[in-house]
Image (cartoon, rainbow, N blue to C red; front, top):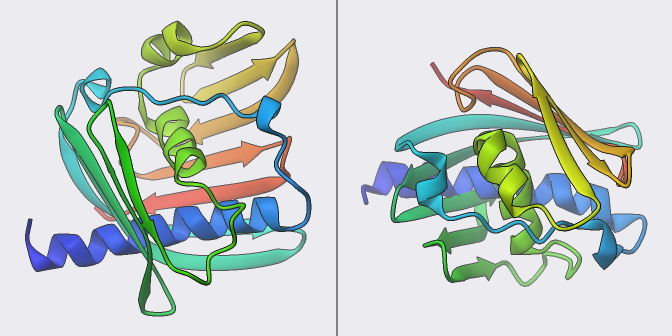
Length: 186
């Protein structure tokens, strides 16, 4: 993996981490509210490497980060930078999630949650639907997704175009009250 890609991968995770940090900092995470979604990278049925700019909004606060993500059928790599420092690294092969986190990162920011938001945003809705536990369902209409728990809307995802990892993706987590906007570089 090139040094440039590793640097960008570091940036991606930071944004996701800050989004989750913002989402989790004011109230404890309710384990029953998370899916535990851990789809194999091959379920994406695509390979790509993308540079991204992430904007996290929560309680009137806005955090912006640069990031990168690399996905291939056998693995995905995600690395994040905040304030010029690597704060999180994820590596997932479909079986084992390996992560590194900066010591200053709050315990509420979990690698599993970062992976889950990424997969809810990017993986095909058919792959997600097959992996959902009882009580959960996902719907997709055009460039909009909705995730429900017991018929209550929990997450919405909107896309500016296809493929899903190009353009702008906006994930609204209604349960934890945060918005993550991901702008991919052309």
